[in-house]
Length: 311
Length: 248
Image 1: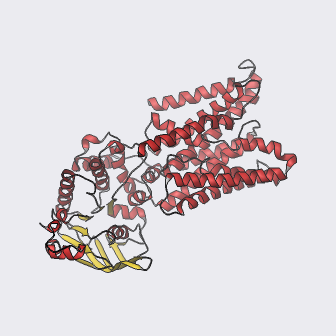
Image 2 (image 1 turned 45 degrees about the vertical axis):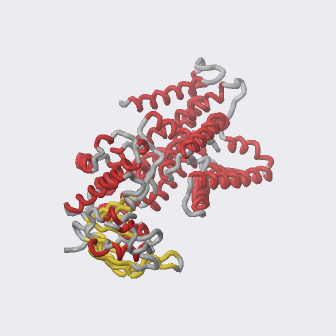
Image 3 (image 1 turned 90 degrees about the horizontal axis):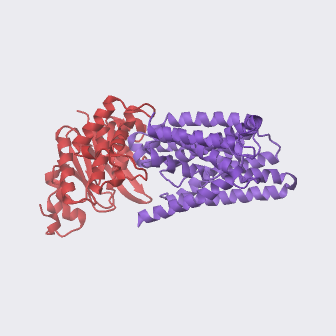
């Protein structure tokens, strides 16, 4: 086993142990661990893997290290679709729910991409701005819908904030399967993703049709994001941070990045969720808030570093 | 013998202005074609029409017998290799990883690299003289070294046709001379090379055919000795016939 793989697997194991132990009774009550914390740990692993994978795919296919399902509006699209499903009475375990959430994610992502390309040559910053605009509009729609549906809005608001309070095993199982399939399919095209990381024109001349690869990788990233959102609502920055952290310890090629980002994302979110349970005991902080507290400064640092590199 | 590139009646316009008008020419094995012309005359657009990246033109472009506007990207990447004027990536691929990506069309998207792929990459690294840089990040290279890395990637594609868009721009004289010597050597060994250049003096370092593009879709195609004559260049670029920039 390579040293880098060992580091990622050790981080994942440590995050799982932390998640199983985190809480008032720590490791003293096996039934709490088995029936409460284990399902939650599995949910965190699935959500983190889905978002980490989606971040790696977006950053590769768009040749843009600022890409992430949260920043591109993918998560906002999935969340908006999920909220409208809740309000329409569609169960989270229904195939219709997963289909609607995927359509929301895919539609929002392509709309951001289309907006960013309107000006001709797409810039990194233009894509981020388009994603911010789409996310803001969809978030406003969600808030409008929640304001109109007062009696159910409180529980849905917790979903929108992003957290793993209520874990439905069936949703975790289906989402976990979707994320695993997406990771497998993405890995089967790793070289196309590497070619896209050189830009669309170069990818074409290496033999990868950029229009086709864009649709394929967008679809896989959106499916992984929507599966994650179905479990945990809007949790930002996992997809942004994970690939950058993975690149510090391993090669940037998608061949290593795809599995490493999925495992790394799983470790990061599992640790964040566990930290949220113990930092302000007995109160609990949603994983989405913990990730935003860590991720927003990380995003600022990335912008600062890129600005420095261009000067 | 079938030409590697056969252009018949090619026309292309941006809006109302015709950039390329009813152009026809052929490039065969061993040819080193230099594409010259003033800024905005359509040199880079022409290369993108030849590679099929732009498909909107009228007329026919055949590469290795395949219609460039219809052939899939995978097939075209086995017929021709293209080096754009500038390629960058925000990710720290090593030179070896970058060169190996030239094998994409042959290796497919899934499997690892075979010994044949590795050998092709090693050969391309040696040919371009950058084998010692194989482990370095492409983002840590100088402009000249990076250009050689992308030429090595194109060579690793093992095609019979190599197209380059301004391969010597922004490079110092040493790299310009090295790259022209490399391209000239490739054409002598039977490869067809077509390069967009800005400096006629460089075209004299090995090109045997020249395509001179003028404004409004006008063009001349013929032997280098004829088209690189100062009076022809002066007319194309709108320079005085006695301009020192046109001297041999």
